[in-house]
Length: 293
Image (cartoon, rainbow, N blue to C red; front, top):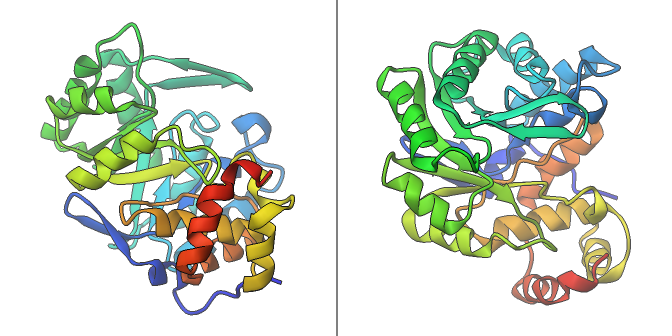
């Protein structure tokens, strides 16, 4: 059994600010709509478009993508499904990570690469300005100030509305904030992987949205036993829904982006926005995280 979605269920978890933008706290990561290994087209292109359209109907108004997903395929899918975009729909993309073969991700934060990536994303998304553009990963061969400085220049040129970071530590976040206003950080974080706890705390303190990627791990948090399964059974919910509800309870800065190519899982994920954990359930899950899997 799963928690069934109600009208505009994504809105029931409240909202988070991205600069001057306000989005519902249950969002969508679109990466899984591409082909195997995040390369090429999916087996069912029409289903991918329907997932995107259904998400918006359910109240999801923040969709995350990157030029490296496909590569380029994911941004085209979003434009085909949703353009022209509703005024309240925020599309976030990323640049600085090259992905040409399955399993091969290469960081490239050079100014010329980021400029070309942003220009390409503008064309594929069919917009004149990207709502949120994120540095996908810090290139160790390029100072983060140089990479973020390029995004600041693109912002001044009117091509980026807000700047975000991905895969950074607290020190790198502080360095980037010396160069530009940062409105979001996207790091891997979920019930059993909290290595970015310090970054999350910095975001909470400074009013920066925290976007956890892989909020359900590698799918591990959707199955298995332990306390997560016990709470899910008590709530009449799925384990994935409880794991998402834990994230939403963990911090008001949290903006989960669970990804799926399944319409059923999409509805279940969005419905998790209305699932409330008790104080004791939240505390027990927080303590028992290491024994969940």
